[in-house]
Image 1 (cartoon, one colour):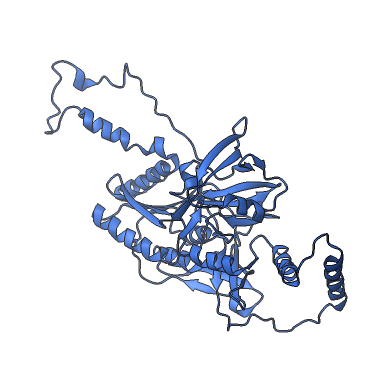
Image 2: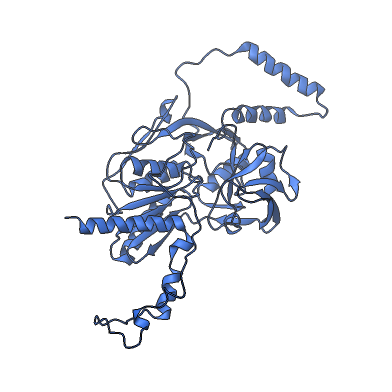
Length: 439
């Protein structure tokens, strides 16, 4: 997905980027270059002249503070989609976002061709419950066109009091006409990690967003899964529609499955932007076979994890190409509770791959699909056990599964619920059988 001319914002009641992989630094830690170039005096004269013309000739009087803040915002917004000037409220919201509790719709968006494009809905939020999908284009807000609005203006319109409804008009690929969805704004506390057992011996881990505690939660979930299954035959790590988050969390999650080697490294122009993170010897996953699910909504920290596990051949990556957000933002505190969120580095996978604007390509491509099971009622439901005077199987079990057992099996059928998870599970089963039958 091309990131050119696209600004990504979070609708969790803030204008900060959940997609931004941020590295906070202290105000005492200066960010300087080795040699300071001379100031471009001619360009500064032009700036002062423009400033003066606006002050004198603009239709409404504007105070100096507003003009200067607008100039600062312009400098940052003109750099790349992820750099931004953070007002006190914005800075506070960014800090809240990394802990996982905020208000809004629960949707990651960007601006494309003048419309709002959905990057990813977040699990258990109004957007996810309304089945808003990655790639949807929002063309109207409460029946008013978004064309002509900046992304910031559109985000402001999507905010509001908790419980207030908002109607989105959406264009979706495969739909012949736009349709509307009405959502109620909510205070959202995102559960970063979810887990469950599949088919008795396979663990399923879903990471919805990388927060400060995500690494610890993944390790706790692995311990619970191993205890419930009395040992796992395989693990599915689901990173689909995970927009990213905190760099340290991505490192900690990767480290839960790796025992050595580089996880990720970053390169930039300033010394403190060059970092390298390595795995520790502990292996909470016990090295069992593993599949990682990704899609176009998997970005930033999700791509770090997928890239590290792919390069170390620790996991098979399955799904579709990821988002391609491979830059690192550093939060640089300023005075008066303000800050800059500045792109200072690119991150690289262990094998030296930059995925900026390219993404992680899966080892096995599996598109999202809807599967309908086909059964022939006249044949499939009539078997040997239904014949009169049939011989018993002699193994001490019932000749035919009970209706309750058949219903439970159907209810547990993943193919109809989530085709990609079912394919991941099938692959893990195949790997387990191959190991058991190998000489």
